[in-house]
Length: 382
Image 1 (cartoon, rainbow, N blue to C red):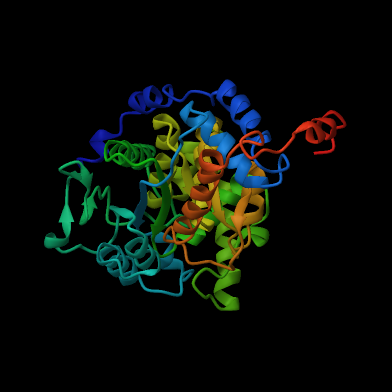
Image 2: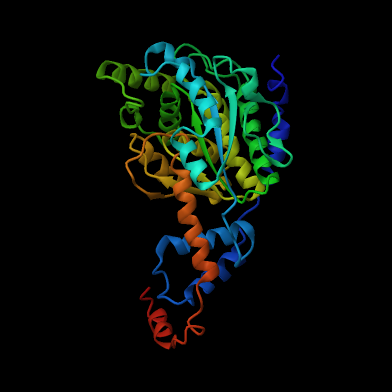
């Protein structure tokens, strides 16, 4: 048995989930009051204010919250459903991009290099072998995030969900626990925010299964062209998703996730759960990431309190997923790459939110009489 599957202890998962606590309501109330008396009309900075208030709920601190120590957690795995012709790219792309993340030459890698963001690059199920000189077992080196690919490979890709369950329950739990382990490593490295992304040819099909299953939307409403499918392959992809969702309708979300796969999405769900466990704000990327976030919320709804969504994805089904989660993307730049490529941009927006809370002076300090605002507040005009 693979040594990482041996780590799939369901009781340990339940024990870790028991560590999740609610947001600090008093800190949020105090943060709201502080925002209301900054040098501005209350709520005039919109969602920047909302973010700073929720950050207070996460950390328990009203003032001094920062999101400047940033990381990206990337889960890489192949998906057996590509046997059905539902992907436009070969699985060699998963291998090469997993390696390329360490070189900082991909879409997200270039941003990470420019902004000085660490990448925790994890192989949880890539099909092809990664060169030994590119692999490492430790997530941290001298307290810092590993720069090589971290080996947590559970299997050489998932099974074909069109023919059988993509993963066993134990394999799904092993992947989830890997995600929680990654969150622990990020916390130990001293990071105060991270984003979650992926690389895995075929994972838009597995994501569509998860989104359709948990939102009740039809396959036609959630399936997209992924990396560029033609009409024939798109129709086939829709049928595969519809059949899988109808067949695997188990009540337990982990059982459903195991049926659909893949290792990447389950590990990403674990990374989201880990953020709630470790009380670290976490940023959701695009279509695959929102599917993993949806799975995490099905496992434990409290995780939603710790999620911030980066960009609106162009893939169908994304809108249904964010509606189900009750969270809103920060921006729409017509992105659809994945890889956590939207997260660095979101980090900057959240830095602005912290700056507003920490650096903006009060009305009194700005020598402005707040009496007129009090009158408007009494009339509920903002």
